[in-house]
Image: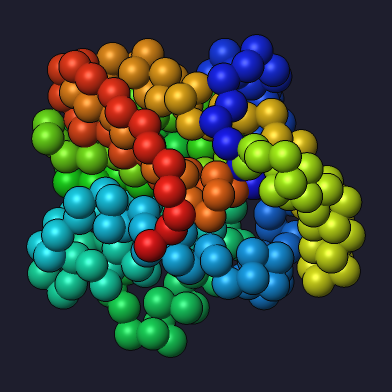
Length: 263
């Protein structure tokens, strides 16, 4: 979960770390769907809620907006967007894992939220061009077989001037925090995650992919490389454990990167 990654490590070319393993990833998430939220809460010490709120705020979503949340999982980011856009807005959450979608629908019903959930592939979104004001994805872009193409597809369904918001893990740096976090991610997280959910390999996968996936300026370069954004920016959260990246849909112009803690 730390500082800016810009090296030539696995995944830094923007092509999916998974290759053609989507079905295996889907099966893995299906196996932990009912225990996923509890695992997130314990392993992130509740920080994932703050990170999602930051993503919604930085996306620029306003009341009445139309939002598409990709790789929605059990719907937590979609629900944050629903609260931001209000009753006059609309939010659709999509995921390739039916078991996750089932949990998300149950949560929406319990909380009285009108968020819709559909099973769909982030690389082949079943929506017309310019259908949304915001498209988002939280901790899912690294699971897409071709992340750059996934960004392009999200940008396709957003109107010009709208935003694509990505919340994803980083690789913290620093002489103390960096090594401490890497130990937690490699050793503690899989052990505790396996105990909480009964599926240790899901958390070994999380460590393996998040430690290899581009973050900070490297991810901003990936966004710029799509040619779909007029401006891209990134902000580090909680010492770089996570990042929020936001791209404004339009002709390419500029990029900025920033650090700082979650607010």
